[in-house]
Length: 215
Image 1 (cartoon, rainbow, N blue to C red):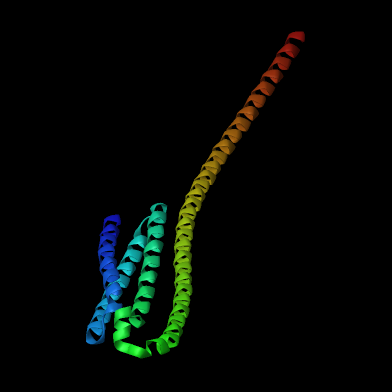
Image 2 (tube, rainbow, N blue to C red):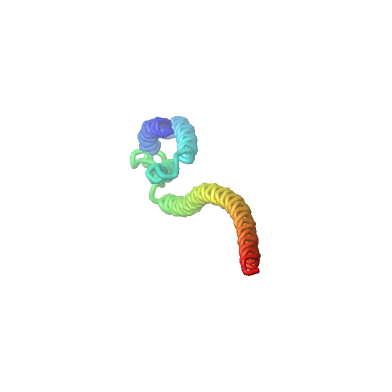
């Protein structure tokens, strides 16, 4: 499992490096060139999300005692992904100074307020995205905790079942021992009665013999 995770990690690193480079080029482009670059980045961002999903599935298959390290790495990759998406949003509405002057000419100063408004909206969207990401992370961690609790309960159940089996075996052995002891006591009582009877007969025989001598 860990080898598959590490393979996805390498693919994710290469892909995010390419995305970062292309995001830096977006503000310098105009027209169809910019649209093509934006579409390319969107496609690669979707590939990066799919890689994260595959990595998440691999982490869930890792034993609980080894999962902590991989979960920490996943949180780092998700933060990196969030930063890339935020940078991409800014790059789509941003232009380099050269391009902005070429597009807007003397109207560049009059559009600064509009640009500031767009950036403000982008920042609000980013904050909302971070809150959603935090909520998703909490849900994933809660699911992991629930799975670990179920595994622990399953182990405890097996222990309880084994204890019950040993208890039933002990009860059966005690019942068998009780029956053996009862039989032994009955045999002892029978022997005692027989011994007492024999002693009584011997005593009576001696008295009769003594009486005959006296006569």
